Amino acid sequence: MKSKIFCNSYLLCMLLLLAGCSLPWLKGPVNTEAELFALALDQYISSGDLTTLNQLQQKYPKGKLWRKAEKIIKMTDEPRELKAQLTRMNNELTLCREKKELSNCQQEKEALTQDTKMLEKTLKQLKEVLIDAEKHTE
Image (cartoon, rainbow, N blue to C red):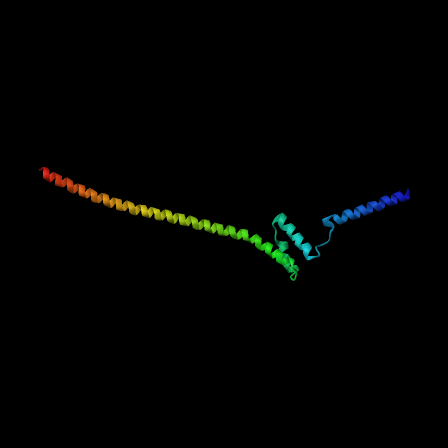
């Protein structure tokens, strides 16, 4: 009976020990550059937070992984820069369209002014023809 209880308690202690080792919150603080890098990547993927990636260079200035972390940080900056550039280009395009519309309006105004002058000239000629016709009928 004692040996069965001893075996069961020994087995239970081993299971508890193995289960405890697999729990991440029971693990101690991050000890290596690779562990910190992995933690930083997990944090970035889950929440978009770059703080731990930024800390990598401070904690391991001679390490190899902080350069990769730096590349990841730069890659996250690229979409923001591209979005800002796209916004600027959209604003410039809007201004160009407005200027083109203004230019088109000015061209139309000039064409209408020329048409008006031609119509006034034609009207003047018609008046002269009408006056001549009245003179000949008298």
